[in-house]
Length: 294
Image (cartoon, rainbow, N blue to C red; front, side, top):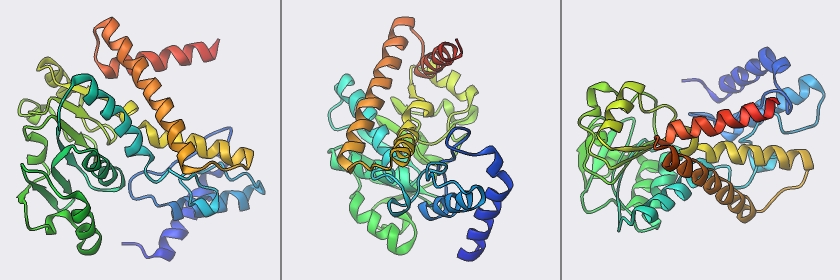
């Protein structure tokens, strides 16, 4: 494990190696697994030092005090939740049961949002394992335990399960929010969820998706489900460029309006063409790329 000083040195060294290929009009990195706002601030500071530029928009996910955007800390899960809420309403599911694999920023925030909405979060997990209760888990209480003791498995009032077992629970919605390739050919036939909502990047292997689709299990793909983080990173760039900063309410309203519009576009195309949501999302993206090149 790196010390804070070593982590800062590594972060700044990466920028020194890559800064010529970065910039607000070239390539703008955003945070991901294990990347904190402080790390993004170090990187942005190093970039400005190397280039002499004062534009803070080359790195996003920064602390608010360093030019970050309000709402960016919850944007990935919040954007996903807006879509999930819409789907549950469309399907008329009353008090849906939810299982969430992964309890980092995105998974924890999604669990909190689902719990607050009255959904029954029956299982969650982190790198140490998972917990399950058919009655539903007290998410706020478990977050406190996670913060103080390091893992959700320290919660004693639920059954212990593995990260593989959580994927195979009979729930309305399964939310992989950890790492890639969790749903593979070997376990796809045992998945019991009605809907898979990809909050992680690439959690469903292509061969697993074929099996799941053939079984009638819908998948909301990562390119849409976790797009909220990237959307608010774009909002952060805009605010940096204008040097005008929005309220949290404004950021989240813009996020909700934009991501629900994208979801509706993809949903309508999937219904019209009788294709899955991932294919529809890719079609929309390719159509936009072609239009932009003309």
